[in-house]
Length: 205
Ligand code: C5P
Image (cartoon, rainbow, N blue to C red):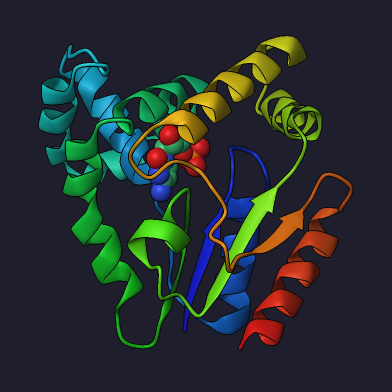
């Protein structure tokens, strides 16, 4: 069984994907981490993330980079969304995601284009979304817990910019697959969102 979980930043898609993987005993890949690694590697190389050649060169990042705590920062998220615009970057990361999706026994992948590009044949497609306000609030609380001082306005601005870039790009834009089940987590608690996702998987099978 392949489960595709797509959606914008801080919608809860990562939490849902992780919970589904645990519930159904499937391996999980957070594909955003791959784009984040490319963004971070590009920065380390001193390259310009808006330059397709520099971004492509960064696709050869070492696997050890995937464990770097800097990968999860807001700054790296912004870099990821800039390098992910370039079609050669998306192409370079395609095979790794595709083989994860098609491994025997199935898998859960979360990202932006899993149900539309990476695994359009997925058995279950979820599109997890939420209002910008609730996503910003969630991210704000998360960062406060980590002792980081960023204002709510700054986070909301970053989210909106990232959404615009992800939705507006020509190659594999962020969009719900026509056959995706939409889960709006704006008013759901964590456990409610997970329960809704598990119910959607059962219903789709
Ligand atoms: O999900 P996450 O916030 O970690 O993703 C970081 C960025 O990577 C996104 O804003 C998006 O631009 C890019 N991305 C993508 N396709 C994916 C996963 C992430 O373009 N499948």
